[in-house]
Image (cartoon, rainbow, N blue to C red; front, side):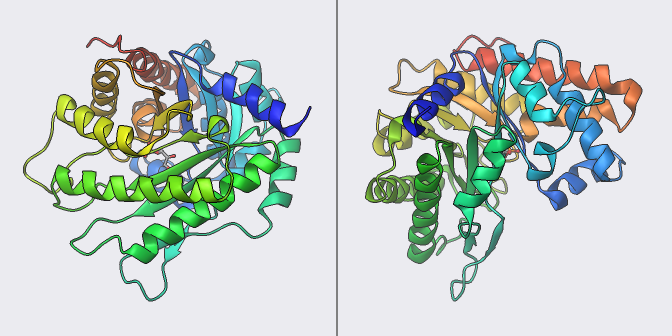
Length: 334
Ligand code: 13P
């Protein structure tokens, strides 16, 4: 298959009405933090058991069209020996892979960060493809403060996201472009809108400069929300209106699907916000989810590291997947 027809086939599978993406690509330190919260040690076997339980959830493929895996998971197997990417694919869930190698401080720009991982990326993608990965993810992070993010951080992260996306497409791998504006801080929703708009504008400028085909990528943005330390929080209607206004100003209609991250919102909030956006009338793109915590939190609480809780873990995951699947077509009701 040519790279273009591979990209097209993967996009069609990922931009499926009523379904979204499960982000299960927590790095070593992040999954250790999540496991610690439920009193579980982060060993390779515990990570395998947990992720294997999630991926074997009966019927998960109805609401989940793709799963973002961490490199370690791509090489792990289910209890019966089936490779985990193969298990996902058999469920109708396209396996994907996080390919950035994390963020570091941006030199000479206090408070700003830059994501790494471009060196050798084409070769790494070759290997990931052989293990079954058909799409990739790269996350850039932006902190909000009165003077942050700075111009250099906005431009440097856009350039890296675009170079990553171009390398993926050249290899026949669909890139998920993830610019995450963090919700930490006491800023207003208006300030978040201003930063998100500047970030997305720069990201699409860079994607254009690098020749990235917009029809063959997905955008994974954060929603426009007030800082979590701001006393004035916003309801789903306001979040939806502010987020859509920014997206309509910055994201070309050629992008097939926008899959939000949850970024620390509660599972209920993340679903209600997605539902509100999908009730605001037709948009040029699908509006779906690529949630990590908002899908997995209840599943982890149910699991508790116990193999005889696997079924409860699966039920909790399936419930959030089903509700978010409904919200992605504006049909969620509490
Ligand atoms: P959250 O939905 O927990 O923000 O995770 C999504 C993700 O992949 C962050 O990179």
